Image (cartoon, rainbow, N blue to C red; front, top):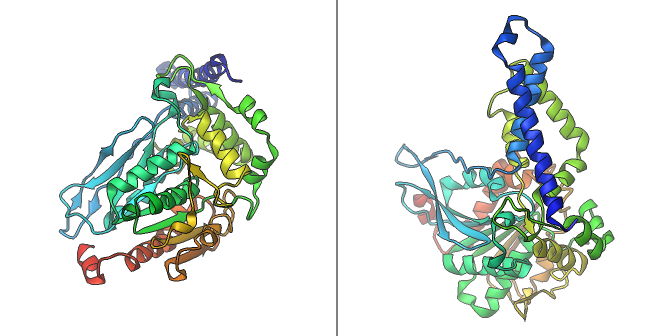
Length: 420
């Protein structure tokens, strides 16, 4: 599985299915066929449209597509995406609400590198923009990064987070969503030792595997069961000749997508079957609920092999974060050194990826932090996606997180009210 031929074979299959879908749609939509209406041709055109769109989206990075933000002056202000720091494996970007005075609340969203682009947090960003200056880590697709740029593992990821936090300064409030939670916790502890004045004001950890063994799930069971040799042999491939990262060892996005879909195959199969019927009946639209979800869900990115393998080995198998034994750039990180950063943990009751208890374990590791600076919230009925982007986030979790930030900010309530 480690050869370019395998990577190129997957891309060939994807490309072929995209072509078949486009061809079927074009053939069944031939104007002459309209003289004799045929339900079979309508279904064929619908199948082609859905198939072509689905396979095309797998290799396209979604656009942020953010709506304008209403402000106190009664006008909607356009949002522009601006790069603050550019790095080979990821950028720090700022969502600039043009023409608006700078908000006192400053939030850094650390996006997961777990198969999808940072745009997975689009709705999270949109919900925070009216109340804060929002920054996010925009990780790059490993297939597009030349081998000459070097490696990128979980230590490099942690150091990227350290640099981003140092650049934004001590007034920043960090929110880590899912996969980065343990590494951002380690990055904060790293700063507590090497540059205490650069620590963020608050840290919110949402549904992350701080201690994967605290509450086992299918994900943690897989991590414990598989051997590293087997994982490397079956999951790692080399980028093919089509992309700038040719030769780089990666965990391919297309392979990840296969695993994602296999976990809920019946649900996805039914969703696509229903969409084909809606398209055939003229009930589908370009940005309907199905397309809105799957345009993002199908857009997967390659992870560097060293990042994926070191995550499984060091976070899930060896539990280096959970045991407070994580090492970054030769320095052992002590989470107990965090003494003044307020930390809040958010979990979802029905989260089947990072089950309740896995993220909460962070508070036990914060031995140097006063209880008054620790907080937690378990959202009833919420799954993994809902705790950062769904109704639970919008209606319940987001207000709690903003209140937590305000309670631990240096600004007075009067200042925050005026700024909002």
